Image (tube, rainbow, N blue to C red):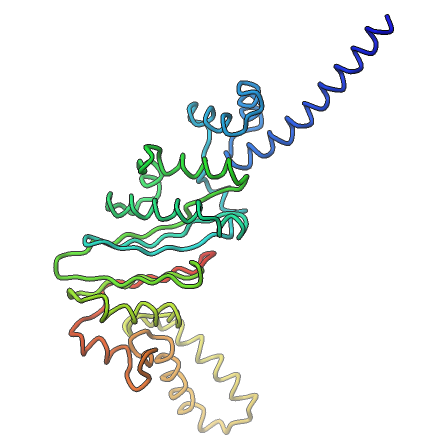
Length: 294
């Protein structure tokens, strides 16, 4: 009888210990798969608490999702990437929950692989991209889930743009500070990288609000005028000079905020407009990605 009691207590302790582990695993599995509590519990039961096998089980049932809107709330680290080939150029942001994962070589490898399949497929639709097959035969979504199962973090393809290039177009792309910033510029003329790479660097360094003056909207100008007028009142500038001062400051502000009017990063005696004119080209598209949606 005493032996039976000891055996019962010992087995009860084992069961409660396993359940505690199961609860932690369920929470971890929910975090990386976005599946429901009951589905995660079932997956772990079916796969002897093996997290990676449970992820695969959920995937096979069509339950696991790496890239949904809820995942975006926690995945704020990561990086941006810009890449091109002869036919097009892509810029994307891939997010994780910590910079530790973002700095992992497997994370970078995944982002590069995603960029490659986008260049091959020539698509910019995020949902379509998630179903594209990568080099290992798995989809983009499943590869994100696999890395999630290893890191215990959400891995999310947040945004992406792709631009096809015609025979008489070219593109420059630049990635700065381990992907904190990436830029892409498409030009309406075929040009060598050596002549246009600096413009992508300039774009990353300055992050202009507008590309050309035609993009400057009146509401922004009106808002800036109000700010300048308030500043002039505090500076006690004579009211009769306000209109002229506002006009001068707005003109300067537009030049500072417009890409083609800025002094070129590598030659301050020239504007970006001057550089473009010397190359005989203009900008067709320009995209700036800063980590976290900037």
